[in-house]
Length: 120
Length: 120
DNA sequence: AACATATATATGATTATTCGTATGTAAAGA
DNA sequence: TCTTTACATACGAATAATCATATATATGTT
Image (cartoon, rainbow over all chains, first blue to last red; front, side, top):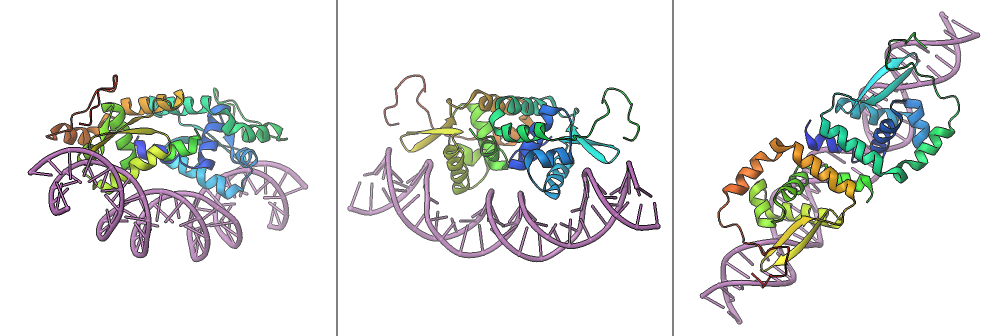
Protein backbone atom coordinates (compact mmCIF):
# COMPACT_ATOMS: atom_id res chain seq x y z
CA UNK A 1 0.00 0.00 0.00
CA UNK A 2 1.52 3.28 -1.09
CA UNK A 3 1.30 5.65 1.90
CA UNK A 4 0.47 8.74 -0.16
CA UNK A 5 -2.42 7.00 -1.94
CA UNK A 6 -3.56 5.67 1.40
CA UNK A 7 -3.56 9.08 3.05
CA UNK A 8 -5.23 10.83 0.11
CA UNK A 9 -8.26 8.80 1.15
CA UNK A 10 -8.14 10.50 4.56
CA UNK A 11 -7.74 14.02 3.19
CA UNK A 12 -11.39 14.75 2.51
CA UNK A 13 -14.12 15.35 5.04
CA UNK A 14 -16.71 13.11 3.38
CA UNK A 15 -14.30 10.24 2.79
CA UNK A 16 -12.82 10.30 6.28
CA UNK A 17 -16.25 10.34 7.89
CA UNK A 18 -17.39 7.40 5.75
CA UNK A 19 -14.26 5.47 6.58
CA UNK A 20 -14.38 6.09 10.33
CA UNK A 21 -18.12 5.48 10.57
CA UNK A 22 -17.67 2.15 8.82
CA UNK A 23 -14.80 1.34 11.19
CA UNK A 24 -17.12 2.14 14.10
CA UNK A 25 -20.21 0.34 12.79
CA UNK A 26 -18.45 -2.59 11.08
CA UNK A 27 -20.57 -2.30 7.95
CA UNK A 28 -22.79 0.38 6.41
CA UNK A 29 -24.73 0.74 3.18
CA UNK A 30 -24.85 3.78 0.93
CA UNK A 31 -28.24 5.00 2.13
CA UNK A 32 -27.13 4.84 5.77
CA UNK A 33 -24.05 6.89 5.00
CA UNK A 34 -26.11 9.33 2.95
CA UNK A 35 -28.36 9.90 5.97
CA UNK A 36 -25.52 9.97 8.50
CA UNK A 37 -23.51 12.54 6.59
CA UNK A 38 -26.52 14.45 5.26
CA UNK A 39 -25.14 14.45 1.75
CA UNK A 40 -26.57 13.53 -1.63
CA UNK A 41 -26.22 9.94 -2.78
CA UNK A 42 -23.92 10.44 -5.80
CA UNK A 43 -21.44 12.28 -3.60
CA UNK A 44 -21.33 9.41 -1.10
CA UNK A 45 -21.13 6.79 -3.86
CA UNK A 46 -18.33 8.62 -5.61
CA UNK A 47 -16.23 8.73 -2.43
CA UNK A 48 -16.99 5.11 -1.56
CA UNK A 49 -15.89 4.09 -5.06
CA UNK A 50 -12.60 5.87 -4.52
CA UNK A 51 -12.11 4.15 -1.15
CA UNK A 52 -12.88 0.79 -2.75
CA UNK A 53 -10.59 1.35 -5.74
CA UNK A 54 -7.84 2.41 -3.35
CA UNK A 55 -8.22 -0.87 -1.46
CA UNK A 56 -9.46 0.54 1.84
CA UNK A 57 -12.99 -0.80 1.57
CA UNK A 58 -14.64 -3.92 0.21
CA UNK A 59 -18.31 -4.22 -0.67
CA UNK A 60 -20.93 -6.92 -0.85
CA UNK A 61 -24.41 -6.81 -2.31
CA UNK A 62 -27.34 -7.94 -0.20
CA UNK A 63 -30.55 -7.56 -2.14
CA UNK A 64 -30.97 -3.91 -3.08
CA UNK A 65 -28.26 -2.75 -0.78
CA UNK A 66 -24.53 -2.63 -1.08
CA UNK A 67 -22.68 -2.81 2.20
CA UNK A 68 -19.19 -1.49 2.65
CA UNK A 69 -16.66 -2.55 5.25
CA UNK A 70 -12.97 -2.06 5.92
CA UNK A 71 -10.84 -4.34 3.78
CA UNK A 72 -9.61 -6.91 6.32
CA UNK A 73 -6.61 -7.67 4.11
CA UNK A 74 -5.13 -4.22 4.50
CA UNK A 75 -1.56 -4.11 5.88
CA UNK A 76 -1.46 -4.05 9.67
CA UNK A 77 -0.14 -0.51 9.83
CA UNK A 78 -3.11 0.70 7.77
CA UNK A 79 -5.60 -1.03 10.05
CA UNK A 80 -3.80 0.46 13.05
CA UNK A 81 -3.99 3.97 11.64
CA UNK A 82 -7.71 3.62 10.91
CA UNK A 83 -8.38 2.21 14.37
CA UNK A 84 -6.30 4.85 16.18
CA UNK A 85 -7.92 7.66 14.22
CA UNK A 86 -11.44 6.46 14.88
CA UNK A 87 -10.83 5.96 18.59
CA UNK A 88 -9.45 9.48 19.04
CA UNK A 89 -11.96 11.47 17.00
CA UNK A 90 -15.41 11.00 18.48
CA UNK A 91 -16.34 14.66 18.15
CA UNK A 92 -15.51 14.63 14.44
CA UNK A 93 -18.13 11.91 14.00
CA UNK A 94 -20.71 12.82 16.63
CA UNK A 95 -23.22 14.59 14.37
CA UNK A 96 -23.08 11.79 11.83
CA UNK A 97 -23.47 9.12 14.49
CA UNK A 98 -26.49 10.94 15.91
CA UNK A 99 -28.18 11.09 12.52
CA UNK A 100 -27.38 7.45 11.84
CA UNK A 101 -28.88 6.30 15.13
CA UNK A 102 -31.92 8.52 14.64
CA UNK A 103 -32.52 6.91 11.26
CA UNK A 104 -35.64 4.76 11.05
CA UNK A 105 -35.93 1.67 8.89
CA UNK A 106 -32.27 0.84 8.60
CA UNK A 107 -31.83 -2.15 6.31
CA UNK A 108 -31.39 -5.43 8.08
CA UNK A 109 -28.14 -7.12 7.31
CA UNK A 110 -27.26 -10.76 7.13
CA UNK A 111 -24.50 -11.83 9.46
CA UNK A 112 -21.01 -11.72 8.02
CA UNK A 113 -19.81 -14.82 9.87
CA UNK A 114 -21.97 -17.30 7.94
CA UNK A 115 -23.45 -17.49 4.46
CA UNK A 116 -27.07 -16.88 5.45
CA UNK A 117 -27.67 -14.24 2.78
CA UNK A 118 -30.81 -15.20 0.88
CA UNK A 119 -31.38 -12.12 -1.17
CA UNK A 120 -33.09 -9.93 1.38
CA UNK B 1 -6.24 18.72 15.84
CA UNK B 2 -8.78 18.40 13.04
CA UNK B 3 -8.20 14.99 11.45
CA UNK B 4 -8.81 16.17 7.87
CA UNK B 5 -6.28 19.02 8.20
CA UNK B 6 -3.89 16.57 9.80
CA UNK B 7 -4.18 14.05 7.00
CA UNK B 8 -3.98 16.63 4.23
CA UNK B 9 -0.39 17.00 5.40
CA UNK B 10 0.16 13.32 4.59
CA UNK B 11 -1.47 13.44 1.16
CA UNK B 12 1.50 14.74 -0.80
CA UNK B 13 4.68 12.87 -1.68
CA UNK B 14 7.07 15.67 -0.76
CA UNK B 15 5.36 16.49 2.54
CA UNK B 16 5.05 12.88 3.68
CA UNK B 17 8.71 12.20 2.91
CA UNK B 18 9.78 15.32 4.82
CA UNK B 19 7.62 14.38 7.77
CA UNK B 20 8.76 10.75 7.96
CA UNK B 21 12.41 11.59 7.41
CA UNK B 22 12.25 14.08 10.26
CA UNK B 23 10.54 11.45 12.41
CA UNK B 24 13.39 9.07 11.57
CA UNK B 25 16.25 11.52 11.99
CA UNK B 26 14.80 13.57 14.88
CA UNK B 27 15.71 16.88 13.29
CA UNK B 28 16.63 18.04 9.79
CA UNK B 29 17.32 21.37 8.15
CA UNK B 30 16.01 22.57 4.81
CA UNK B 31 19.21 21.91 2.89
CA UNK B 32 19.36 18.33 4.17
CA UNK B 33 15.78 17.71 3.06
CA UNK B 34 16.48 19.39 -0.28
CA UNK B 35 19.35 16.96 -0.83
CA UNK B 36 17.51 13.92 0.52
CA UNK B 37 14.45 14.46 -1.65
CA UNK B 38 16.36 15.84 -4.64
CA UNK B 39 13.99 18.77 -4.97
CA UNK B 40 14.51 22.50 -5.29
CA UNK B 41 14.68 24.56 -2.10
CA UNK B 42 11.50 26.65 -2.50
CA UNK B 43 9.47 23.50 -2.94
CA UNK B 44 10.82 22.00 0.27
CA UNK B 45 10.39 25.28 2.17
CA UNK B 46 6.82 25.68 0.98
CA UNK B 47 5.86 22.22 2.19
CA UNK B 48 7.69 22.66 5.50
CA UNK B 49 5.83 25.94 6.04
CA UNK B 50 2.55 24.13 5.54
CA UNK B 51 3.56 21.40 7.99
CA UNK B 52 4.56 24.06 10.53
CA UNK B 53 1.40 26.12 10.10
CA UNK B 54 -0.65 22.94 10.47
CA UNK B 55 1.07 22.25 13.79
CA UNK B 56 2.90 19.07 12.80
CA UNK B 57 6.39 20.54 12.89
CA UNK B 58 8.22 23.11 14.97
CA UNK B 59 11.39 24.88 13.92
CA UNK B 60 14.41 26.45 15.55
CA UNK B 61 17.13 28.59 14.06
CA UNK B 62 20.73 27.66 14.64
CA UNK B 63 23.01 30.09 12.87
CA UNK B 64 22.20 30.02 9.17
CA UNK B 65 20.15 26.89 9.41
CA UNK B 66 16.60 26.27 10.42
CA UNK B 67 15.98 22.84 11.86
CA UNK B 68 12.60 21.20 11.82
CA UNK B 69 11.33 18.52 14.15
CA UNK B 70 8.02 16.87 14.99
CA UNK B 71 5.93 19.03 17.31
CA UNK B 72 6.20 17.15 20.63
CA UNK B 73 2.93 18.71 21.79
CA UNK B 74 0.87 16.97 19.13
CA UNK B 75 -2.00 14.83 20.44
CA UNK B 76 -0.93 11.29 21.23
CA UNK B 77 -2.95 9.77 18.41
CA UNK B 78 -1.14 12.03 15.90
CA UNK B 79 2.26 11.03 17.24
CA UNK B 80 1.19 7.38 17.06
CA UNK B 81 0.10 7.70 13.45
CA UNK B 82 3.37 9.36 12.46
CA UNK B 83 5.40 6.72 14.29
CA UNK B 84 3.42 3.78 12.88
CA UNK B 85 3.64 5.16 9.35
CA UNK B 86 7.37 5.74 9.52
CA UNK B 87 8.06 2.31 10.97
CA UNK B 88 6.11 0.53 8.24
CA UNK B 89 7.31 2.43 5.17
CA UNK B 90 11.05 1.99 4.84
CA UNK B 91 10.92 1.45 1.11
CA UNK B 92 9.02 4.69 0.59
CA UNK B 93 11.94 6.52 2.20
CA UNK B 94 14.92 4.43 1.12
CA UNK B 95 16.12 6.59 -1.79
CA UNK B 96 15.87 9.73 0.29
CA UNK B 97 17.68 8.15 3.22
CA UNK B 98 20.45 7.00 0.90
CA UNK B 99 20.94 10.50 -0.51
CA UNK B 100 20.86 12.00 2.97
CA UNK B 101 23.53 9.65 4.28
CA UNK B 102 25.65 10.17 1.18
CA UNK B 103 25.55 13.92 1.74
CA UNK B 104 28.86 15.49 2.71
CA UNK B 105 29.19 18.48 5.02
CA UNK B 106 25.92 18.13 6.86
CA UNK B 107 25.51 21.01 9.28
CA UNK B 108 26.43 20.21 12.86
CA UNK B 109 23.62 20.64 15.27
CA UNK B 110 23.60 21.66 18.89
CA UNK B 111 22.04 19.15 21.23
CA UNK B 112 18.35 19.60 21.88
CA UNK B 113 18.53 18.47 25.50
CA UNK B 114 20.48 21.48 26.76
CA UNK B 115 20.76 25.11 25.75
CA UNK B 116 24.25 24.90 24.32
CA UNK B 117 23.35 26.78 21.15
CA UNK B 118 25.88 29.56 20.67
CA UNK B 119 25.02 30.70 17.20
CA UNK B 120 26.76 27.99 15.21
C1' DA C 1 30.37 47.36 3.21
C1' DA C 2 30.06 43.69 -0.12
C1' DC C 3 29.19 39.08 -0.93
C1' DA C 4 27.80 34.24 -0.19
C1' DT C 5 24.79 30.88 1.94
C1' DA C 6 20.41 29.37 3.87
C1' DT C 7 15.76 29.99 3.96
C1' DA C 8 11.04 32.17 3.17
C1' DT C 9 7.42 33.89 0.45
C1' DA C 10 4.74 36.12 -3.45
C1' DT C 11 2.95 35.36 -8.07
C1' DG C 12 0.72 33.62 -11.98
C1' DA C 13 0.29 29.23 -14.50
C1' DT C 14 -0.78 24.51 -14.41
C1' DT C 15 -2.81 20.44 -12.67
C1' DA C 16 -5.71 17.82 -9.65
C1' DT C 17 -9.75 17.40 -6.93
C1' DT C 18 -14.40 18.01 -5.95
C1' DC C 19 -18.91 19.14 -7.08
C1' DG C 20 -23.98 18.94 -8.74
C1' DT C 21 -26.69 17.29 -12.31
C1' DA C 22 -28.14 13.98 -15.37
C1' DT C 23 -28.49 9.43 -16.46
C1' DG C 24 -27.59 4.37 -16.38
C1' DT C 25 -28.03 -0.31 -14.05
C1' DA C 26 -29.74 -3.77 -10.88
C1' DA C 27 -33.01 -5.66 -7.67
C1' DA C 28 -37.67 -5.83 -5.65
C1' DG C 29 -42.49 -5.45 -5.73
C1' DA C 30 -47.05 -4.69 -7.84
C1' DT D 1 -44.21 -5.50 -17.59
C1' DC D 2 -44.16 -1.24 -15.09
C1' DT D 3 -42.68 1.25 -11.12
C1' DT D 4 -39.92 2.11 -7.21
C1' DT D 5 -35.74 1.94 -4.57
C1' DA D 6 -30.77 1.66 -4.22
C1' DC D 7 -26.67 2.54 -6.16
C1' DA D 8 -23.03 3.75 -9.85
C1' DT D 9 -20.98 6.62 -13.15
C1' DA D 10 -20.19 10.23 -16.85
C1' DC D 11 -19.71 15.12 -17.62
C1' DG D 12 -18.56 19.86 -17.56
C1' DA D 13 -18.02 23.53 -14.09
C1' DA D 14 -15.99 25.23 -10.04
C1' DT D 15 -12.49 25.03 -6.60
C1' DA D 16 -8.19 23.78 -4.52
C1' DA D 17 -3.50 22.27 -4.61
C1' DT D 18 0.89 22.37 -6.59
C1' DC D 19 4.48 24.13 -9.26
C1' DA D 20 8.69 26.91 -11.03
C1' DT D 21 10.40 31.31 -11.06
C1' DA D 22 11.63 35.50 -9.09
C1' DT D 23 12.71 37.90 -5.19
C1' DA D 24 13.11 39.13 -0.21
C1' DT D 25 15.24 38.35 4.50
C1' DA D 26 18.61 36.77 7.80
C1' DT D 27 23.07 35.14 8.96
C1' DG D 28 27.92 34.60 8.31
C1' DT D 29 32.32 35.82 6.01
C1' DT D 30 35.83 38.67 4.06
